[in-house]
Each structure stands twice: as C-alpha cells, then as structure tokens.
Image (cartoon, rainbow, N blue to C red; front, side):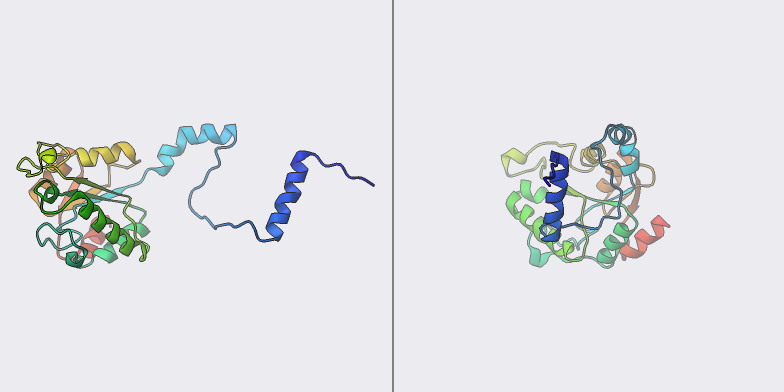
Length: 217
C-alpha cells in the first residue's frame, strides 16, 4: 500500500529524523518570549512590547566608580576594580536592572592613548566580567575635549559630561524607566549630566555594593 504525504507531513517526519539523530539542539529559556509569526501575536507585541521590555537602569561613571581613578587609565594591568564593584554588578543583574557605563575619555583627545587602546581595554574588561556572568548593556564614551591635541577631537561636545547627550542617546535606544533609574558618579560633571536628564544622582561611596543595595531597597 502506498502512503501519500503532503509537504507539511513530509517536513514533520524529516524534523523527527533530525531530532532522533540529535542534529537539532535547544536551549531552556525562562525569560519573556513571544513569537510574532502570527497576526495576533504581532499586533500584541506592537502594542505592548515596549511596556513589557521597559525596566529600570543604573548609569555608572567609569574611572573613580567602577575602577580606581589613577589618571587616564588605558592599560589593563593598571585597571583595578573598586571595593564592592563585582558584587554590585551581580546584584544589579539579579534585580533586573540595565547597566550602562557613561564615561568621558579626554585622554584620547589629548593624545595620551589612542581610540584603539581604549577599545582594547573595554574588550578585556568585558571578557573578564563575562566569565563572571556580568554584562554591561552598553558603554557610552566621549573622546572630545576643548583642549585636545588631536585636531579631530578638539571641540565643545554636549556628549561630554556635564553634557547629557550620552545619557539621552541611551533613553532613545533602550526601553528605560526613567523613574526609579539612577546614576552614580564621583565628579560634579556627573551630577550635572544626571540633573539635566532628570535622573536621581548619588556620589560614589567606599563600597559600591553596599551603596547600591541601600539605594534600591
């Protein structure tokens, strides 16, 4: 007896064979997921996705907050995390906060280090943190300075703190709940940038983990 199968049925049998031969892998996923391949789900996502994905964020200055500020740090061997930072970053992840780094990098403009050297340091920091299951959602930096030695970086730039365009660019790209989000910095320029973006601001304390835990609770 011949059995005739339509294309859909043939595909199902083919998929089963792939599974039996362990040619198909899978990953458990317990976060929010929606398949927009159906009209109902597509319109639901269009209406509600921004609200569902929105969450609070912490904006962190780098030098003096994440690492000890030794003056234009650009070598990985000179980069040392401040007290409580690793624990704080893990805590923020568990609390489902976005983690954004907002940093002025005038050393590029002044010719102390190159853009490539700055990016290489970032790469090594991210690699180190990823092994601890810690991830920055984005790192915004401004290389400009009015007293730059490198001509292309010599300008007055509102991305550079106390300007707030680094912060505002994140609000445009990410679904961030402004209310409940906050910034931590160590300079007045950090405070002014946060104030312009209507962000709650805190000057960094000795132990970042203890500080963030007290802010969130």
